[in-house]
Length: 543
Image (tube, rainbow, N blue to C red):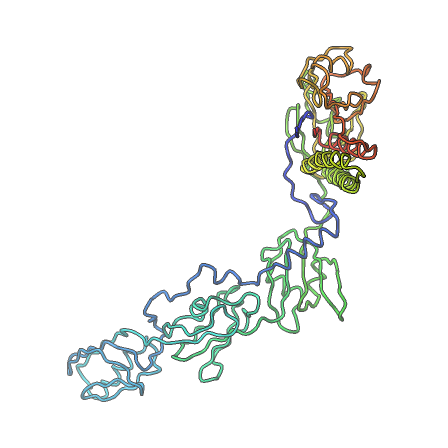
């Protein structure tokens, strides 16, 4: 069975964003864990432009592909109307030689003419024969469909139908987009009769909206070349991607034009290889801008600066603002002197603090204790069958206890008030100062018959309160207790001392369980773990 009793007045779970440097918001994080996290994030970086073909469909705005810049070619159909000296109303097709034929005028070469100039081209030809009273109107009815081959490092190489004025993006979309692991976004060639007619760099489109629009013909081939050298960037930037770069690399300034660091980014970590040896450098952005970067480099941009002020919070029984931006050299008593506390409602003499760095250390201490306990449990054995069964039952109980105890999150409580004296520690970013309410209630929990809250009785000892809740359960270790004070202090009360230990208003008495083991070492480790959990999280975990 597992139970949780929370007695210490909670001050509200703080949602934090771990910093990456030495200023406000920084945390004490294992460098190896941080590096592994960075590596996993950067290793998964998507290529810049990877979202270009996700949910897009680069079909021409006009389905017929007709636009003023379209170049007339064989197979196109044109509505032709002539009136005046000659009358004609027909739909003509551009023949294989690029001509249309008009009776009494003859063939007119129009292949290679822009759509916007078509009307003038035909009028000029007609007026060579009929010099007066002639009017011409033309309209391009439809274009010749084309089959374009798309190959190279795309997801679905093949041949795709479209119109001559469809963009390269349209055909790449039809081919499933560029292969993100192998394909290049910066070198896409358009071939006609085995000759390159256009080379396209999609970065120009992604960054500046510039995209060449070659008019395709039947049998053209679009080739996506293999992915080139790349540099990954992440952290305090607006564009976290892997960027394709020239073979000889780029400098930091060029990279920052792609990544767009946030305004308060100040440093960058460079991870890479030089002369077949790994390097790791931590640089101001000014120095990074002058450095040459090469294939495989990984850059993590950081906000690393010492702020002149830090942010701290006030919780509990006080009046007025709950957050303060204070200079870095501010101490606890500097803040307390500014607080408005009703002495009848708030107990300023029991003030406590919560600190993130302490919480992390407490969590690690609990994990270490649980790891040692698991090692001791599974490393013990018994030589008799009966003993083995007992050992297995004990191991299961303690294993369940360990599993649940791992879920406990410490509060990071820093005890600063004791016996009417308040210490004056230097404040750290995101510290929480808690002022408890005055109360005359005493909580009794743990291995007692009726866990409940009682009104404080002056002079009552710990044993008197245990008696008032019906005494101990059969699982209790009657000689072991913990008393949790309003100021966050946790006091172990063992043996005979419990009979005379005086309880104060606001205390919580926890009766500890008897550990189901005959091993003195395991009993000691379990008791130590329970105490660590209760002292750091104000939580009692029962077997």
